[in-house]
Length: 356
Image 1 (cartoon, rainbow, N blue to C red):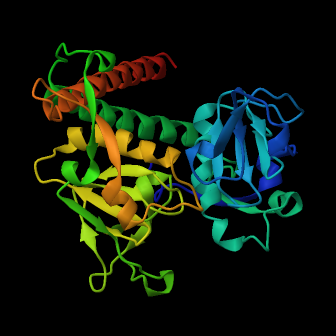
Image 2: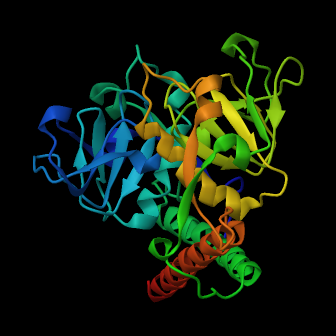
Image 3: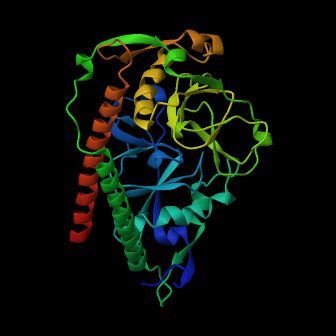
C-alpha cells in the first residue's frame, strides 16, 4: 500500500464529498438527563459534552460531526445515536456509503483547515460547502475512498496491537488480584493532611505572557485533563514537582490528580507528597482528598491555613494507623479488573475487524 507521501492527492470542494445538515439548539435548562450523547463544539471527549434523553431533528448516527463554532474545523466520528447542538454540522458522504473507516479518515483532513477559522470567522455552512479539502485520489482524479478505508484499517490494526501489548504488560506487572476486605468492612479514621503528606507546597504564579515554549506539563486548577493547562519550558521562577498529588485550591476547587511525571505547578494548586507513597497509594488518596470539593467553592477557596486543618477519612490497620498496604492492593485489584475488561474489548475489536 502506498504511503500518504507516495499517494496522488487532489483538491475537492466539500460539497462534492458530503451533504451538510444542521444541528439544533438545546438550552441547558431544557436538557433531560439520560444516556444519549449530546455533541457540542468541543475539541475533546469526541465532542460529547453531556448525556441526555431528549429527542429532536438533529438525532443522527454513523455520521461525522464538524464544529463550525467554538472549536471550528474539529471533527469527530459518531457511530452511536446522538443529538447535535447548533454549533455542530452533520456530514454524510454524498456518493459513497457512510463506512466508519472512510469517515475516520476525515478528522485529520479537517484539522488541516482550522488555522483559517476563528471565533470571529466561523466555519459556517456556506463557507463549509466551498471549503477545499485535499484528499487521496485515483488515477481518474476521483476521491480514493478505498485507499482511505484501507489506510484507517491498517492504522487501527497497529494501534490495537500496541494497546494490547501494553495492557498485557500491565496485567503481568500487577499480578493476579488478592482477596482483601471490602471498603465497608474496613475500619476508618480521620487524619490531618499534614500527617499523611510530609510536603504540602503551593505552586507559584506564572502569567500566560511569561510562558516559554516547551513540553513540561503546566498544572493549574482545571478539573479536566488531569489538571494540565498546557505545557511550557520555563525553568526559572517556577516551582517544579513530580510523583505527587495536586489539589486545586481555587477555580475547580478540590480537584485532585496524581502526577508521576515532572510538572510545573501554578499558584492555583497545592502539591501533596510523601516519599514513601507509591503510585497506587497516591491514586487511592486522590479520590479521598478530592472529596474536599464538597466543602469548598469559587467563593470559598482552600488556602494554606485551611489545608493545615483539613482531615480526611482513611482505612486503618489493627494498630489504628493508615493501612497503606490495603490501599495499594485495593487499587491494584481495581486496575487489574479494568485492564482485563479493556483487554477483552481490544481482542473483540480485533475479531470484528478480521470479520469485516
